Image (tube, rainbow, N blue to C red; front, top):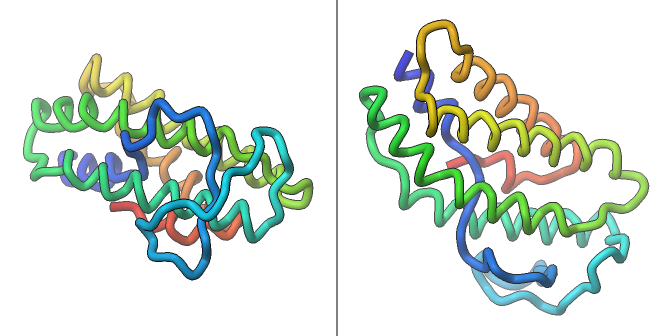
Length: 165
């Protein structure tokens, strides 16, 4: 069961820029961790290319931050520690991603992606608080939401958001 936990709790998230209220674009020619190219007003529909670039940049930043929380998970206490550390990172990623406005053509898949990220976060919060008591289904729900999130990211074209750390 703990081997499953290691796979389930992998995810995209991060704390950098958590207090920021502006959405940024990534310049496709810049490095993955480079500064944003320009600011986009909140609510402006992004082109598919800009949405993908911005979302992938968020995932890269937050995957880097998430790596710092990971260590070998060999028991329930390790899993709870990990999820307690990961929850604020995932909340920050979800906040940033939720500020992006997809083009109409990607909106249904984008909305599913965001909804599945919220489900992953909610399940991690439950694991952080309750652990994985027998019969709780917390790990099963986290795994299913994670797999659905990865599939939705693929439908949008978010390759970096599919490459979970």
